[in-house]
Image 1 (cartoon, rainbow, N blue to C red):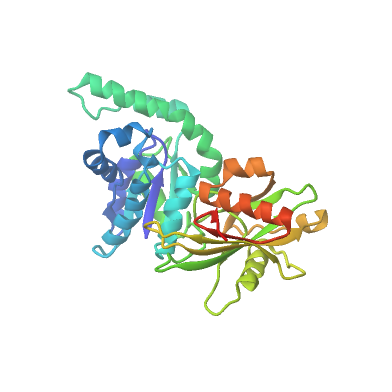
Image 2: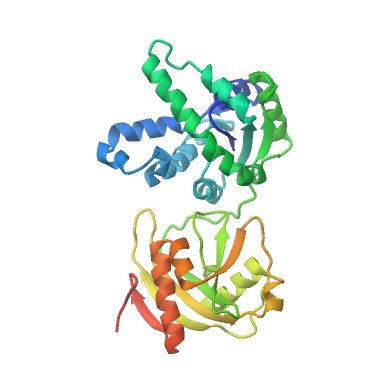
Length: 344
């Protein structure tokens, strides 16, 4: 298990984490910031100039998961992780990957009002003998108060909140320990096992009466996606698409969907690639749209979007696949792609 202590600078994550070690038997402190420091030493300086924060590095986010999994083979109890995580898509990627490894997460937000946070940051002394460094850290901490305030809506909806305004570090740790014991902050994310070989996946495009396409926002990975999923062993791909639409959205398709695109996705470590099929699920009436379900463990949101809007929301590979699928739908003829490029 991982007890993830979230919150901005000044919330008391580090001090509470050290106190929590006494309250959770067998627990170990796991600080992913050390991974960021290590990457700063190993990666070219130019790479860090391209990002605002080491959390923007895909390698850091993957290392957070891989290192946690490795540590849990060495220690008996939970990992206590004091780490600010404000971008929801990074939360999806990290927590979703942990869920895929069957590692449960207790997400706890340590929160205090901004006036309290500012006061704590002002009195924070990490390098008392270096006024320049201390001022730089203080500025960095204050700059994160705005993004923290912007992230509060999703953080409070996702995590168990402990208000640290009037609590000592020990009292904060006691509140967190009690929350862990009662199961508060559990992240109910669908546990999708990581592939170990090439996979076959089937997606279904659904449209509204304005010809906008339906996209869904999974809880277990970053970015928007089409309804659908991995085809199970011995399952027909079109049937898998129908099954996934029913499971994810509560929509029973009245006919077998028509194939639009078959795309071979090249292996790109850590992924294995495989075949990706997109089907035309047809147009949903307003009545059927009003009955769309949203399972919290799998999907956070759904939205009908135009082709232009989809380009801004989907990762490049998925956007390219959608673009060709829409052309195939217009022409009434399926397309065969290899690595996103039409062949034949």
